[in-house]
Length: 210
Image 1 (cartoon, helix red, strand yellow):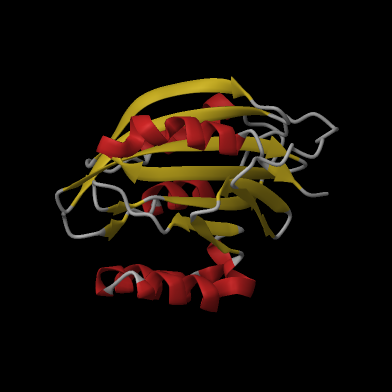
Image 2 (cartoon, rainbow, N blue to C red):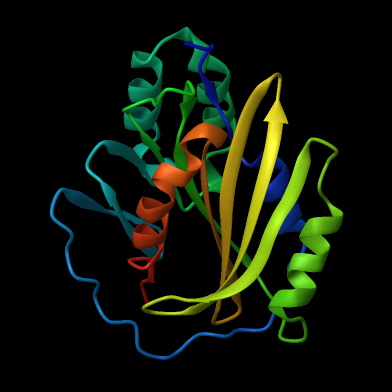
């Protein structure tokens, strides 16, 4: 198996944080999602989402010791990621990862962040700014608007290569009450097709807690 890597969307996070000028586009009502057998609800600061029960993690400002201990238990390859988390816990509303590492050797993970927004910029303008921030090792595969159970959203699909490891991700954007919420699902390229239904089902459970 390849050396295991945790593929953060660090570049995407920086682009998201830097581009904070988007208008809200979300319905008023956000009904509680139906519990999914074998899945667990994770709650962070102002947000919740469901993932399969093989995932662990949480709000890093509250649960950082639990998250880092579980990462360290997977082996020394994840120590750089542990150090990044310990140094930047306030970046994330939630950070989750799958303890069942797939054949690619990539640690599949989900992170959620939010940033203040203004009311004058659209989802398309936001994604234009993100696309312009891609480094050379990131490639935009698809860009679309999607309808979730609770929100209207935008979605970008990207592929990237980091030190020889191939990864792929969905980045969702939800605009709500002067905040831009970005939810990034990352896995190995060879696992992406298999995991796509899980990522999409999970995103339908995403809820901003008023």
